[in-house]
Image 1 (tube, rainbow, N blue to C red):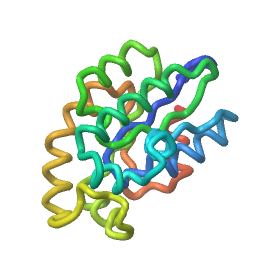
Image 2: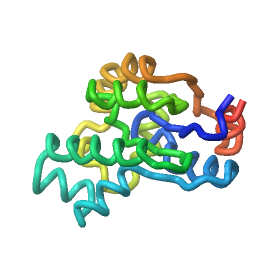
Image 3: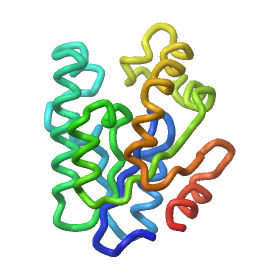
Image 4: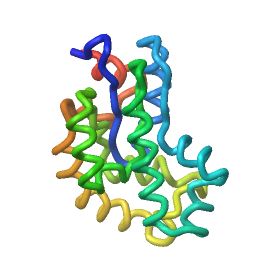
Length: 169
């Protein structure tokens, strides 16, 4: 059960639906949505792809950590759609644990994520072998998502509303 004063943090692979589910969940809970990718882009004044190109992945990850810290520091309970790679940092995993937030892993199979990420060019990590990259990323990140998650919700073959209902249970 989600406490009235508790943040809800959605984690998972890119394309798992964190932003989409986050919007629906935030509306349902009458809370603001904080999307850490949007925070990163707003603070940098450029897109994620442009940040990767100009500053590299390490600089993007530092910005991602700062965005997570900012979101978790909100005085008002919010729904946070966390960037897919946020769990790669041990400091971020510790911050999630220390925050008291309800962390929900939106678990999507690599096949579903590959289909969902086929459109668009805003995911620089998927340039080249998208399927192979996603499979490697899932293998690397799955234990980290599992480590931080208070709840695991499978998103495969479910509507946004079904996923929101599962998060709220």
